[in-house]
Image (spheres, rainbow, N blue to C red):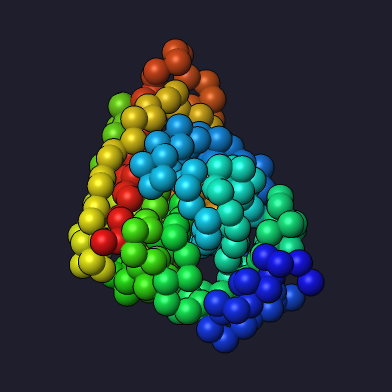
Length: 261
């Protein structure tokens, strides 16, 4: 057994092996979509991780790692061990990186002892988390003094589109029906502060041309048949746009780094 596995098992509170049961998850896009989203967020993610001092971090926990598309970057940039955690065992087994510890677990009750890590990372995870303050407090429990929590999450309440196409309303309807919080971004700073973290916040600057693939992400959400027809119609309209910036669609992302005193 390799040394990194031994270290993880020593800090686990109630060891959980990777589950062999695959459950449908509206919060887990397909592999290619996950890669595209990770690439799109590369700049903001790099800034947030740099702010959190990733280059000196020796024990990093990636919560909600999914297909593991961001794991190689975390492994390359961190100074020590990276642990991937997700509640989907199938996604963990098929992840892009196989030489990191992979743990099946729930962000509401992380299976680790207090202060097991010096960096805990979330990306597009907390919008799916019920009881946000509880989940952030649970993550803060994992962080040792001097460590940090990094979260990169959207806020569809600040979504801009021109001309108005109804995309904001579709995202709200679909996310709420799937159990997500479309306005999680604006709530994160307060949740981190309530968990006792010194919090830095930045809104990402990622305006880009509207893409039909981004519109079709709505297809994975539990919309009505009429709403699905509307999504396909909008995707077609975007693919036939007259110029690069017409129509314009932008959903802001919050970059939050909470440092533990």
